[in-house]
Length: 315
Image (cartoon, rainbow, N blue to C red; front, top):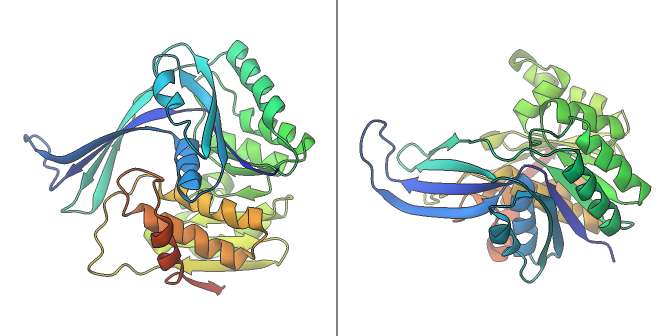
């Protein structure tokens, strides 16, 4: 039976701190502090699970933190991590309510070598099945070559699985050469992929089509507050999705919105929905994430209501 598989090579523990106002150099009392196992693929898996989808989460985890990550294995979310020496990254996200702004502080984590990469590849080959939808997310840890995602995409295709990619830099440039079915970078990541300058913003649809022309079915680019763009090779159409917050709606969290977007689109893609419908659900999930306490911890009813408020049109 087809299922979702998420891959998080560079896992982390995220500490999310909610402040009334962030004032550097002063002692500030937090409204709340939340610590969760994370990394982009973990956030995607959490979002899929919260929406009732079965998902297998894979990736590397530092042995000092493996127990915490294994506790994710409940209900519809299963785990199969490759343990490596050391600890995972410990990242801090500070949400400033007064400015509606998040500050991210990232720390280094474990390093992988050939032994653990081979161990992971063996596990990957053993679990991926035809028609699985495999979601490759986030940065690569030290020791993993930029071609790591490309290798996984090629292995997945040999098993007749479908592949989605959300990463940046050389890992993205190399990964697209293996033609994943879907790529979903943010604007900055896409600009890095094709060398698009800020002045050429209006050329995004044209450049998305060029990238898709290499054998990629869907190219989605998330634009933060400005919504998202999605180009479909099958339809040769580009869509723009937008959303307007209401004054009464209070943002609680900006971390993981892109991951929630990816989870929403993955569900629509698995169902064979139209690109327009897929973009609408993906954006509803991304917006719903703004109101959550933890990245990817979505509420199905909230997503359903938000879906009705997403505006999608051809461009």
